[in-house]
Image (cartoon, rainbow, N blue to C red; front, top):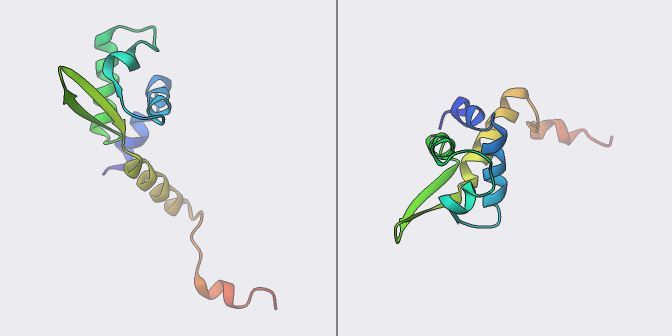
Length: 100
């Protein structure tokens, strides 16, 4: 997973809102598209970007595509970024002298 593709996918407010909508469970492409004042082809492009970053998964069911959130990829990207920034990285030896 490339962190760059995840952050690129997260850079657009519609794509971030799609992820928020999927927190409640899987939704069809049409259900998601109904939340936005853009064309279906535009939404398809947003779904493609999210899928390419592996942030959502799409499964065909009965002629519909059901999208679900892939939290694993998001967690890996955030943790990887935090690691690069030195946030949350602790050395267990640093704790040994704490409180003395």
